[in-house]
Amino acid sequence: MTSSLRPAASAFDAVAPSYDSRFGVWASVAAQRRAVRTALIQQFPAGGRILEVGGGTGEDALFLAQHGFEILLTDPSPTMVKLSAEKLAPFNVATEIATGEEMEDFAQRYLIAGRPLFDGAFSNFAPLNCVGDLSLVARGLSQLLKPQATAMLVFFGTCCPGEMVVETLHRRPRQALRRRKLGNVEARLAKREFQIVYHRRAAIERAFAPWFILERTVGIGITVPPSAAEPWISRHPRLLSAMEAIDRVLAHPLAMLGDHILYQFRRTA
Image 1 (cartoon, rainbow, N blue to C red):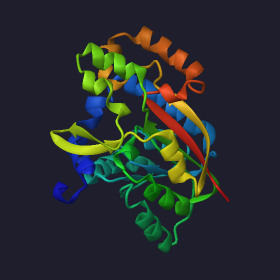
Image 2 (image 1 turned 45 degrees about the vertical axis):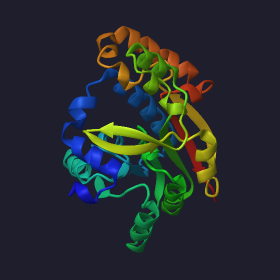
Image 3 (image 1 turned 90 degrees about the vertical axis):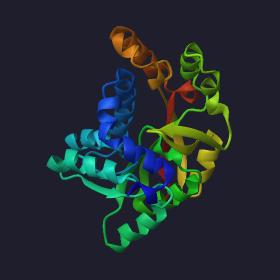
Image 4 (image 1 turned 180 degrees about the vertical axis):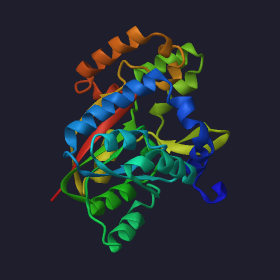
């Protein structure tokens, strides 16, 4: 089944069965997830219909469903979608296979079926960094969202001091500077090779500009370290808690130094 998938989807499909047990237990991941969830709750209308792009195993969709939102989770990995459907079944959350590159085709199929527009959309932990041409995503979302709806999209930061420190301490200098590279960058997961792009702010804003206005950016993981600091940081909960508190202060003035950056877009009328 994975032979017909795009390389990134194939890699995440392979790791899907162990994804939660591998990454879900890490305190740094949970800390960054809390920061994103706080922003989502603040921006999305109560009880709104929300589209998730690259939802993985459904952890964030589950959180929003528990808070009264109606969610449609999409992901390019069939195994991720299967696992998320099982997890989200008690909350009647819909799940569908869809890639970022084919978001416009997905939008057309969705609308032809007479289904309602969304009150918001989000993407967490940088699945859109696996998409080279972000305009493909933007065009699809522009068709799926109501006018003035919010799109909350989390990308990798391109200058993360925390990662530079951690990777240098691990004696991996090439990894420490990998986010400064332009164009396609080689990545590896579950012994599968794929490519990602560390999109710059200007490129992201330009790709979405015909249909969306960038309202703000929020730094996610400015002092909270990236997952490369695991499992060490999970053994120091008081330190991590202090880092979270500092991040809440620095999230806006130093947003571009985050491990991840949340881009808050508003759909134009």
